Amino acid sequence: MKNKPIIIVPGTSKSIFFEILFKSLKKNKFKSPLIIISSINLLKSQMNKLNFNKKIKLISFEDLSRINLNNQFVNLINVKNRNTNNLSNENIFIKKSLNIAFKIIKSGLSNKFINGPIDKSKFLNKKFLGMTEYIASEFNIKKMAMLIYNKQLSVCPVTTHLPLRLVTKNISQKIIKEKVRIINKFYVENLGFKPKIAVTGLNPHCESVLKFNEDEKIISVAIKSLKKLSYRINGPFSADTIFLKQNRIKYDVILGMYHDQVLSPIKAIKEYDAINITLGLPFFRISPDHGPNVKMVNKNSSNPLSLLNAIKFLDQR
Picture 1: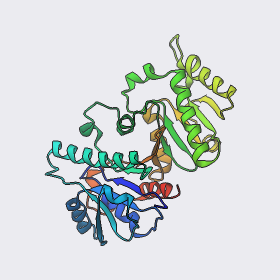
Picture 2: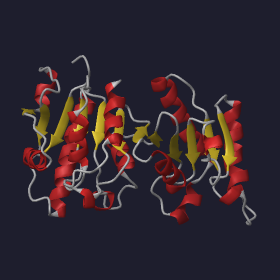
Picture 3: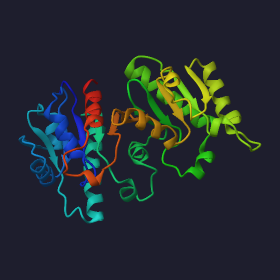
Picture 4: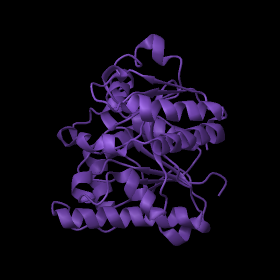
């Protein structure tokens, strides 16, 4: 297959994903074949509700190595789903869908994967911090990073879905250096340049009334060490000013110490114009930068930009 397919697992049954997927397909042509892994009953139901008319082509894992696919049809690997109002059935359905996607990736038939929103609290059952960690564990990857990517400005949290009281315990020179190396490698290998990286401090204004100041003892030391290795990196910067326009335009990536420290401002600035890329995996894994948004299901008024950007990004690779 000339262009490896983009594997798509819609995720939670009750979400806006099918709506934004159909909107993405209506006005855009992609070189890479798209393969949906889901239930045919669910797909048909959503197509009817959202007035999306396209023939479905049922395929199997075995077909992928011997047939040529295109986007004339909706290419579907059917996963039987029982009553998804039952949480256990819903989780089984999602896990089966993901496992098929992982099988395709491990076979080498694709290196492009998108998953739709998944209710982490119900699916992961506190065994993993998030889907990033869950997917990495399936491929025995220990070092990864969450990059909320936009061509103009991206962000990466050093810690992801940790409760705030645990963040400080998980900030170290080692983890900061690890994230910077992973980010730099991704940009060099896939975008063709070394990124300019700004690092936020942990404390307000990078100051602390305590004897031990993490910004001085951990973050600054890590940055100095990385500078000596020729990484394009500066900081620590106060998180309340680094996102001001005159500051952020100097950088490609802002590395923050915890999830909301950098995700809140990037969503305020870019809204839906960003995608969530898991760095460090042996394939491309992207998810749209939003949740299931159950209140908006079937209203046909959700913005498809994040998913469209995710497909376009993978279509170019």
